[in-house]
Length: 219
Ligand code: G3P
Image 1 (cartoon, helix red, strand yellow):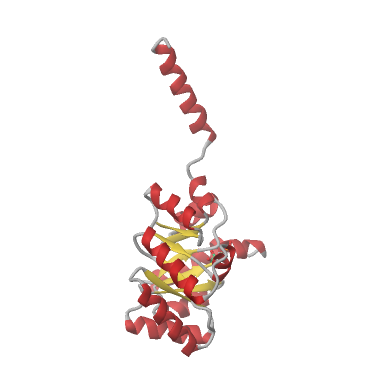
Image 2 (cartoon, protein in one colour):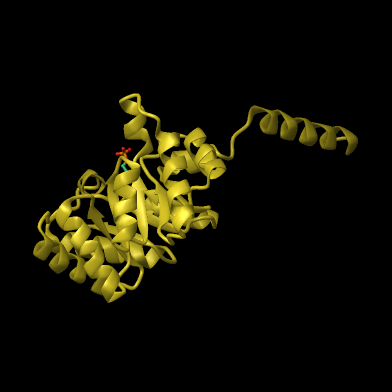
């Protein structure tokens, strides 16, 4: 399973990269705004800064919602760095843009996926990644893991190479369940990745090992 971090915070991206387990970064306009990154020039520089930290897979989202606008923005983003994956919303013109970029060999991530039908359509249009939003489905009481299972089944039925990028991850259970179902990628906050480290029996076990070592050494 690939691990992406879902943030535009450079310090958190560096921390995850330093762990040695990071495969990429996803951003969105809300995450960029949270870091106070505004204005085209600053936004472009921020994407370059992220690309300088990680090895690959930096999802950068277009703001336009019409085909021409998405193509123009996506081409500018893709030209910034080979690591950029153009993030396109699941709307009608977005499907056309996914096909356009697929034909040009520019990688894409189709975002705001909430149904298996949307994922199927994005895969047919040649998206490299589809991003179903788990946490937001949980928020409305919908079956988020069932959606991942359905998309996995459909993609496997037809051999689609589009990767399932489980997004809106909120906790470690989301990550582990997605790994069991077979999501290709998860993107979550740093806390969700670091949360995988934790178990109280690990803490108490280590404390006991160290105490026994100290006793045996007569310290
Ligand atoms: O980047 C898209 C997605 O991961 C957003 O997550 O927590 O805002 O629902 P969240």
